[in-house]
Image (cartoon, rainbow, N blue to C red; front, side, top):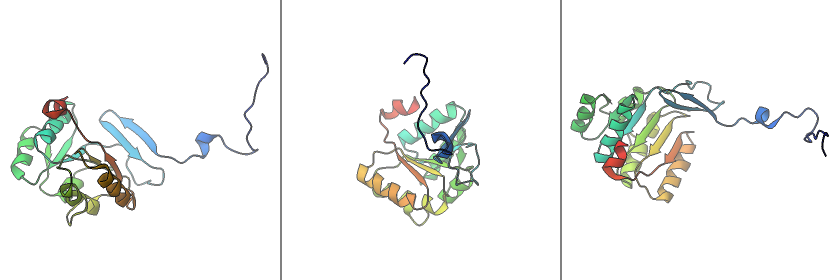
Length: 179
């Protein structure tokens, strides 16, 4: 049908697909991504740093990698000596989870690099856990190698608070964390 224009069928008055969908909005900034949803108007459009919990060998090297890229990283570890070490290397230190959250702009992105299992649940849902301090639109990334069913359970529970949860198990060892 050369020369004939074909028009997509749609009801009169209907908007095109991109106009009627209210899905997640993604915006990007040179200092990192920001995630927001139109229903979360109070969310600031730019993320200005990352929270990082768990400063074992993998965690410390991942933080070093972020710092080398010019990122602002707020760190917390049960062992304050490890937090202090990362502060000497350029990170912002926090000595409680509440303090870590308070030092991040919204939407907050907090990366966990703690041992899979009960430790992850404690960091997220414990008496002084992240779920107590985070707000709708914030993001938790589990960088440990959690069992997938545990991750699904955590995501479902956080969904009630409209907190995003990503299971992003890490591999590559110490060298991989530095790259």
